[in-house]
Amino acid sequence: MLIDTEALKRLDLKAFFFDMDGVLFDSMPNHAKAWCTAFEALGIPFSSYDAYMREGMTGASTIYQAFTRHLGRDASEEECQRIYKVKCDIFESLPVAKPIPQVLEVLQTVKQAGLEIFIVTGSGQHSLFDRLNTHFPDIFCREKMVTAYDVKKGKPDPEPYLMALKKGGFEAHQAIVVENAPLGVKSAVAAEIFTIAVNTGILKDEDLSVHGAGVVYHNMGELLAELPEIIRTAKR
Ligand code: MG
Image (tube, rainbow, N blue to C red; front, side):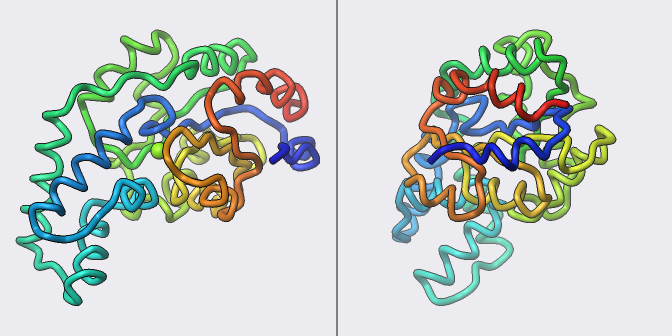
């Protein structure tokens, strides 16, 4: 899929909004493993692909959906909390996720172009927030982040991306989003922001393009290669 150059030309680019899981950190294999193991203990079939497709959804929604689909009933509040705790405990016990290869170079290219950088994530994982400065020195600051603690609805609702626009004082055509998840793309596109999908996991490209991504890359290296031209085209 080629990037939508005409759409890029209509932008007045001032900022990049980066998702965190699967974009900055390779944390999705751990999330998927934690979900699969937590549901397996209950006899509920749940694959890695199911986990990747639901990335960004709240833990409660993921659990409610799996219950309705496989047990034909809603999970109780108590079940929901218990299963989510199991999932989080498993996640925390797994080896810490490494940065996605070449994302540092992507961030540096954006910064050197004089553009602002925000993180927009549904995550509330302090283990990852704490490591941002270690892996990506002088790139991020707390004022330029929207996390699980800031929003009510979360992705796929446009709320997180709209909040980032508001925080930065940007209009939708002044930002580009980098996402790896179908619901993240849906959220960003609903906020009317040009969205670059990078398929860093096990999804099909169509899972991302179907929600309106302006392009789908297969890794950060592909984005890095085209990034200077993207910025030249989108910046006034
Ligand atoms: Mg993600």
